[in-house]
Length: 197
Image 1 (cartoon, rainbow, N blue to C red):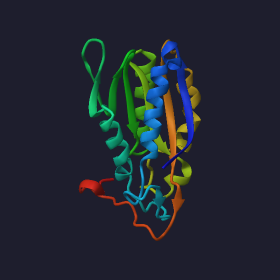
Image 2: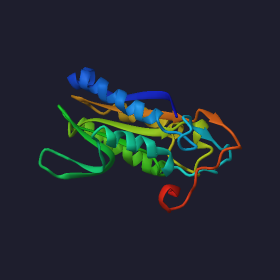
Image 3: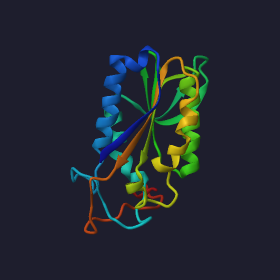
């Protein structure tokens, strides 16, 4: 899997320039790049059929890599009062607060909810950093119809960037396949184990 764009939505205060954030950001990006299809192929090759591929299995290697590096998977982040802020795909505690990563597998409305939530949590200094991972338009067309994607979030970037921020980071990581081939299997849809999504 390759990263074709990183959009910095919020970047403010000392943590955004810290060595810890740079290292954590590199870990997230490395985990994204480990995602492959077919599994164990070393590259991400998509079967180029419009709306033909599922989405949930795509992030399997990403989650596995972060878990190996000590992240809590599908775990809650809590605010200073100990209140649960909801579950995220991956969470790790940092020196300035939680860092959370969300890999979008829902529809575009879900992506907007994720961005609104992450923007609010960073702006309110509840989390130190949030990262939302979404497909590019080039990848989106081959996935489940109406899956969240960067092109449909882009018109709203100005709104999220206008939110006052004293400390923290919010980024959108845009992902894309390495190659296309009708010789590879389609990514399964459904709800059975690896075939989810």
